Amino acid sequence: MAEIRVEQLHKSFGDFAAVKDSNFVVESGDFFVLLGPSGCGKTTTLRMIAGLELPTSGRILLGGNDVTFKRAAERDIAFVFQLFALYPHMNVRKNIAFSLKCQGMPQKEINRRVEEAARILRIEHILDKSVTGLSGGDRQRVALGRAIVREPMCFLMDEPLGALDSEFRHLMCSELRGLHDRLKATTVYVTHDQLEAMSMADKIAIMNRGEVEQFGPPQEIYARPASMFVADFIGSPPMNFLHFHAGIPRGSGEALLGDAVVEMPVLQEDVAPRDLALGVRPEHIAFDDNSPLRGAVYGSEYLGTTQIVTVNTQFGQIKARTKSTGEVRPGENVGLRFASSRLSLFDKQSGRAVRSALFDGAAHG
Ligand code: ATP
Image (cartoon, rainbow, N blue to C red; front, top):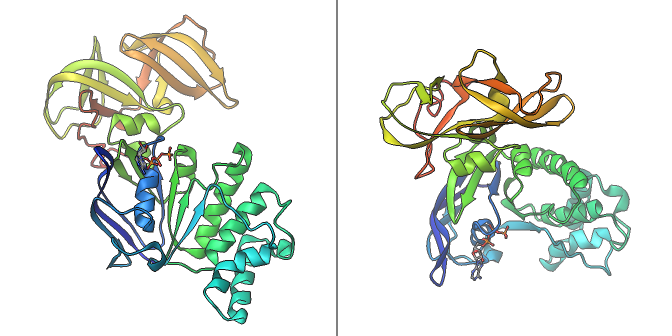
């Protein structure tokens, strides 16, 4: 196990900056996820940590040692990729043992490690089977076995579940997290799937256009998004934005939307008059006939115990998650009440969150 430290990591391909001065620390034993849309620089970051790509500038420290210019083979890490190529002419045992055999490890130690990996992955019963004809899940477990037996300082995984169907992905997510809890090995996991990230990660770095927009535990990222990009990328449906123009003094906990005064966490900085967006998660909205903030119901989606109700307001369309027992009709005029301590405020031009009591954790419960 080892800490991974990334300092001012930058990678340009010609004029194009794929990764822009990234900084983050993956603590020893953490399951860390690099999350973001396609092309945001996740794989390039992972490849630099692995030693498969040289940074343009910056440093990578593995277990306190500067490995920035060390070759991949010198870094004591193991990979699991989406397209796991197993050797078709070898059985499961030989596939898992292959890299150890190449290192010239004594057979007794190889046997011990292979059996230990098979026990952890619960694939003892297929050790002597051919890999051709294995299910997708078992093939993935064998690929993980090949990584585990090396007992590396850390694991790097690039969309390892990307090729699996959604039901199976879900199952493998909890299996991977369970595996991590047993091994406690530092893991860097790349995905564009927020649900995978939220369900598995100890910490997430959300990337956008080569930059880390926010770094932190999933709960913090969900509750206190640092930017409109993060607020929109995380959550299903994502955070709603109500657009308005105002100036708000430091120490105020109120936003004026038309005639409606909306309470929100107290601001820690002055906001000069500008375009703003009030952010509210769907589950923090309730219908209240007495609220002056109103809109017209556009439609609803039934989801079993809850429903998603879409409401058109003069500040933008919003989606509320309410109990499915509450009936709403399209066209109905409804009042909206927000859980004030959970609201976020964003500067629309920069897209960044305005610092508030919510951001300092004071109003977050
Ligand atoms: P995806 O999930 O689609 O793989 P990603 O977030 O992992 O996306 P990267 O693969 O890191 O993104 O790529 C980031 C950007 O860098 C992309 O625009 C990509 O086209 C570009 N890029 C990556 N490798 C190279 C290369 N060798 N030469 C030129 N451009 C590259």
